Length: 87
Image (cartoon, rainbow, N blue to C red; front, top):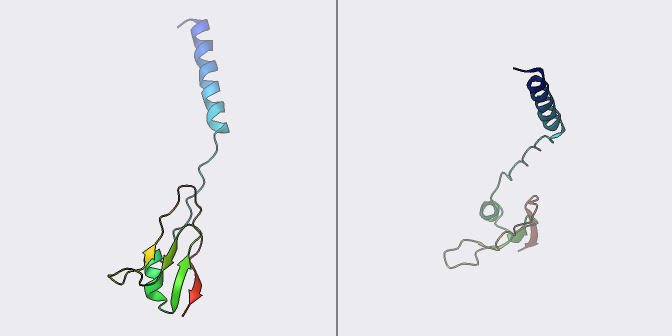
């Protein structure tokens, strides 16, 4: 290998190493809620409506007795589930 090729490879490897050092570390994923949106209603029967910042659910709003929940948006940060209306 010629000196020129060796210098090129060394420069290339150095640039790759520097680029990797500048790459941000992946942030840890948020811990999922321990209670599902539907499960919250089952665990809190006195709550008529609850939300997590992304979805809203209403107790026993469907024919099968299951809560009716809105669809979660795409750009949404899920928060803790809180009751917003009680019996």
